Length: 166
Figure 1 (spheres, rainbow, N blue to C red):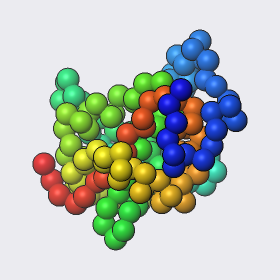
Figure 2 (figure 1 turned 45 degrees about the vertical axis):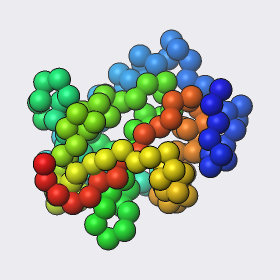
Figure 3 (figure 1 turned 180 degrees about the horizontal axis):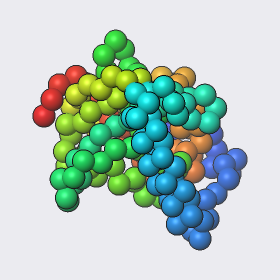
């Protein structure tokens, strides 16, 4: 079991995602995000702009690592400073990284839509030290990240996105 000093939640306090539940959870997440992306984009951010709990949504557009096709995912909007964004590849603390993680690693030029406005960014994965420094900010925006990191041995990747185009 891997522990990170900045994570305050203990693994034994977090409900486990059982191996046989993973395909069901992934199926639901895939279809829910497709619906969310379609409605959010069609309404220019007026509809389906919050996740359960009231957390704001952004749409992240990537290019497929293998196919090069445009891919879109609904994620929690995580602003950082006046013009940067953070992306957290948590996938609820599941054992593997989400597919979009590999897309961004292969193609770091992304578009992020907040409300009806889409901007270009360059994403880079932060170091472990940077992640530890960013952790309190991330939890101030979405406290469940602590539970997700406690749930998995995977070091959940965090990306810093700065304005720019690839």
